[in-house]
Amino acid sequence: MNIYFVRHGQTDENNNRYYYGKLDVCLNEKGLSQAKRAAAFLNRVKFDEVYVSERKRAVETADIILGHNFKKINIDKRIDEMDFGKFEGKSYEQIKKLYPEQWGKWCSDWKNESPPGGESYIEFYSRIRGFMEDILKLNRKNILIVTHGGVIRSAYCYILNDNLDFFWKFASKNGDITLVKYEYDNLYIDSITHVDV
Image (cartoon, rainbow, N blue to C red; front, side, top):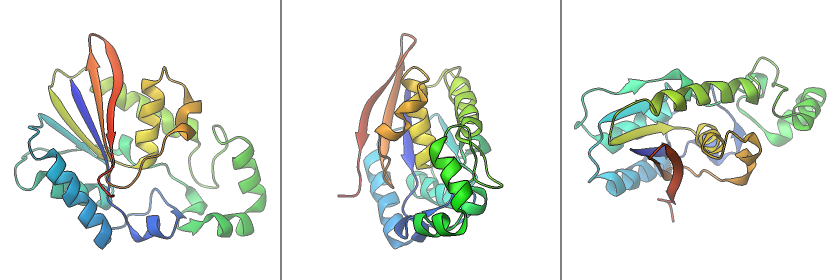
């Protein structure tokens, strides 16, 4: 099985380095260009199944990649980005200034603490793990998953023996394409391609 993860194209919030997960925003011009490059890279792959986050930026990216060639897209909220609660739409500097105590707790225990009104990484990861377990039960050749950087990095943690400490050991850039293979009960990262050079 070939599992293709694509991170959505850039948004203005990415460009401004804001924390955002639940905010539903569209791709900017650069993001549209990244999605078109991902589409060109993947144009020869025949997908048997497609899963997309609920967020507009992911849906837009998937629409560009697939064109009108795919009938059924599975919108799955389990692969929405992490909910940052009151930290949403704010920069690192703004959060430190507005929520110094909560920011400090979150930084000292990023797995278990959650931003005010948001979700903890453990909560977030549990839905990604459940999603991955369901994907591995499918009998498909090529699966496309269009989602977010935090989701993809969490999928890497799942692949690397369910070790959450790997979350900070990988980047996931806008438009990146990761090919994960599942063969003989072995799950591994085959390649990571940056479409934006």
